[in-house]
Length: 105
Image (tube, rainbow, N blue to C red; front, side, top):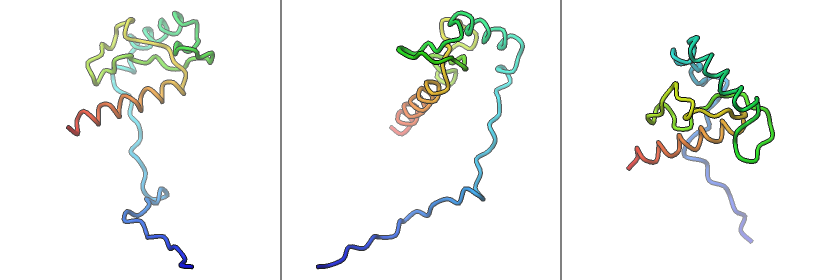
C-alpha cells in the first residue's frame, strides 16, 4: 500500500514573534467628551445589559448599528446599541466581510 505524503504549503506561516499588526488607534471623535456622554446614555438605556437578541450578559460597547464607515451617524441614539464583547466582535467581523465582498466585485 502506498503511503500518502503531504504537500508543503505554498504560503509560509507568518512568524507572529516578528510580524506584529499596527497598534489600534482610537478615532478622534470617539475620544471626545460628547462621545463619552453619548456612550453613557446608551449604557443607561440598556441598563448595562447587552442588547443583542437573547443575550443575558453585561454590555461593554456602544456599537453603531450602521457602521460609521458605511454611512451611520456617529451621534444618533437610534444608531447605537449596547453590546457585550462577543456580540460586538461577531458584528464587526460580519460587517467587514460584507464590505470586503462588495469591494471585490
